[in-house]
Structures are given as structure tokens and as C-alpha cells.
Image 1 (cartoon, rainbow, N blue to C red):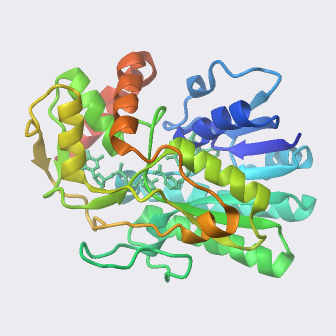
Image 2: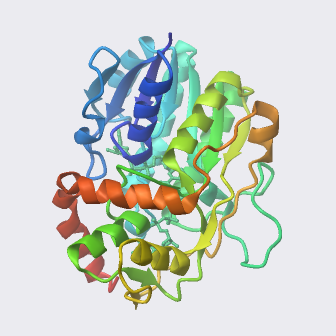
Length: 332
Ligand code: NAD
Ligand code: DAU
């Protein structure tokens, strides 16, 4: 049994990871989360108190972080400002949390010699043409486009420097777009599902040809546990489940699964600097560590996600109006 410290464990992927750990291991989890607009304590409801502790605090608080590292065997770092659209409007919190926050954690990992796993994104590699036969690999050069992805790239480079310069026992994973329960309604899939529930037409940025490589959050969680268990210190692993789809196809599928006409959506103002396509080659993770995704059927995963949002309106309703009001100011 290990004691895991999970930063950002009240967010979308972090909370799915905590549920996954409780269901599939005997580890004890302490969540450190600042409960920003994106964090929701209710995402951890129902978890046993003897397995999961919650600490409300900020990853830039060095004293608090130091005390929590002292009591942990390993740390999994999910906390971040995570939304590209917000980073275009207000970049500063992305620098504070993604850069200074990661630096603060790395210093504690160094002081206490703790195993550290850094959660990152495929967006650090920039984007691909629609017809490019290549996909991102661990050797693709960094080329981030947005304030969000550039701060994630910066945080990855800090981790690599702390491994090389100070011997910190860290690994990094860069994952593609996640979907599943507990995702904030600002993000593409939950925004469109909750729009349809509310009788609002889904909103597609630009022509909708942009491609994302979708993976279920549970598959992300199993990959992270595999890397924690078997990963090589200092290495980077790409996580993906061969789930490429363009945004137009995803909106049409959501409408179809929710019993609406497939064309009942609107095209709205495109995102500035909008990355065209992401695609992950996860051969290294699969061949070296033996990981395989279990939720590779996107249609059934999406149907289950739609059911979750229908059944959990109390979870997302408090964020919905403010999110749509913000998008309305951008013509989105
Ligand atoms: P999210 O926005 O849903 O959750 C982020 C969590 O971090 C929230 O609970 C928030 O309260 C917390 N947080 C933010 N700033 C904090 C701070 N200063 N101190 C402590 N807690 C703080 O994000 P997500 O989509 O779950 O993403 C989690 C991680 O996974 C991020 O590092 C993100 O870059 C990465 N990632 C996300 C995706 C995706 O598809 N969503 C894909 C690949 C990687
Ligand atoms: O690739 C991993 C990344 O995936 C993570 O690092 C980010 O944290 C996560 O937010 C996600 O980034 P994206 O920008 O790809 O996700 P988002 O849900 O914001 O948008 C997905 C696609 O849908 C993108 O092409 C923009 C488009 N979009 C988004 C919204 C909110 C729309 O067409 N309409 C919308 O209303």
C-alpha cells in the first residue's frame, strides 16, 4: 500500500483518477486542490474516508506542499489551469499554476526525494496537417501554440531539468483529449451535451474540421498507474487510444445519440490560433509497459457520458449559465 498525493484531484481527470485508484488498488490518496472554478468537491463524493483525504490548498503554497510531500510516497500532479479559451482571454493564472506551481512541487520532490509523475498534454507538440501520415511521438519537437499549451510545455521542461540537474525521480505523460464524467461544461463534449439538455443548439468553432484524438478518462488513469508502477525514471510516455475524430462528426454523433437532427447546430467564431489536428502514437507505452486501452469504443463511451450528464444535472447546473455568458461575450 502506498500513500499517493494527487494534485488537482477535484478536477475532471484528477477526480476520475482518484475513483480509479480506490477501485483498482489499495493505495491511500490525499487530494490537494485549490477548488478553482474548475474544481468540484462533489466529484469526490461517495469515496471512503479511510482511503481518501482532501486538503484545500494551492500548489504554489511552498510550506503546505512541503508538509504534504513529507507524508507521501509518490505524487501525481494533475493541478493546472487547463482551458485554452481561458488562456487566450486571461493568461496570467496559467503562468502562476502551471509554471510556478509545478516548480513548487518539484522543489518539494527534491527536498523529500519523492517519486513524481507529471501529467501533461499532447498540445505541447503543436498541431498536425489533416493529411499528415505522422502522429506525435516522444521524439516530436515541442511547438506549443497557446498560452495554455506553452505553460504546459514549460512545466514539462522544468520536470526534465529537475531530473537531470537534481536527480528527482520523475516521469512525464502527454495525453490526448479526454472525455467522460465530471468534465467541466466549458469543454467541448460536455458543453454540447448540456446545451442539448437545455434546448440550446451546439456550437462548433469555425468549419469544425479540427481533429482531436479522444480517449476515455479511465484509460488515462490506467495508463498513469502503469507508468507509476513500471515507468523508467526520466522518461516521457505518450498516452492515446487511436480515437481521432473531427469536431463536426462528434457534434453530429452527440445530436444523433440525443435524438436530435444531426444538423441542429451552429457554426460560431473560431478559436484564435486554433490547433488543427492532434494524433498520438502510443507505441512506447504499449510495447515497453504493456498498457492497452479498455474503453476504445468511442460511440458507447460517448453514450455513457451523455447518460451521466443527464443523471447528474445538479453537478453541472451551477456552472452552466456563467460558462455560456462568458462564451457569449466572445461570439462563441
Ligand atoms: P480541470 O481544469 O478539470 O481540473 C484542474 C484542477 O486543478 C481543478 O480541480 C482545480 O481546482 C485544480 N487547480 C487549479 N489550479 C490549482 C492550484 N494553483 N493549486 C491547486 N489546485 C489547482 O483540468 P483537467 O482537464 O482535469 O486536466 C488535468 C490535467 O491533465 C492538467 O494538467 C491538464 O493539462 C492535463 N491534461 C488534460 C487533458 C484533457 O483532455 N482535459 C488531456 C491531457 C492532459
Ligand atoms: O489535447 C489535450 C487537451 O485537450 C488538454 O491539454 C486540454 O486541457 C483540454 O482542454 C483539451 O484541449 P482542447 O482545446 O482540444 O479541448 P476543448 O474541449 O476546449 O475543445 C475541443 C475541440 O472542440 C477544439 O477543436 C475546439 C472545439 N470546440 C470547443 C468548444 C468549447 C468547439 O468547436 N466548440 C466549443 O464550444
